[in-house]
Image 1 (cartoon, rainbow, N blue to C red):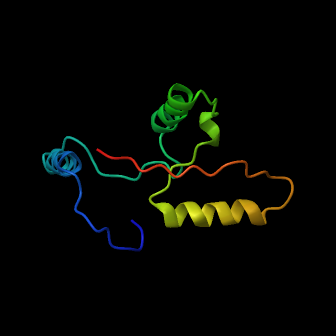
Image 2 (image 1 turned 90 degrees about the vertical axis):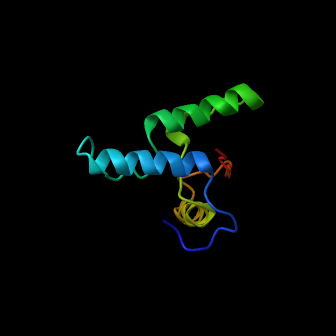
Length: 99
């Protein structure tokens, strides 16, 4: 996870999904593992689609990076800026996803 302490607990839907996943793992139906570091293709695609639907902006899903929190996003943005002129940082979008 990330350093910090959230001020509120996890939403019920998130807790229910976590319980269901752990229960399925306990029954041997699945294993717990890591997801890809930049977010799944489906999630990044849906975020890109959200920006098209909501704001009329075309965002390439390959340009979407999902982080575990704003701290990780700021570190990522800093690394992009330090890479120099070959790379361009056009826009940093911080999205709070609520369930």
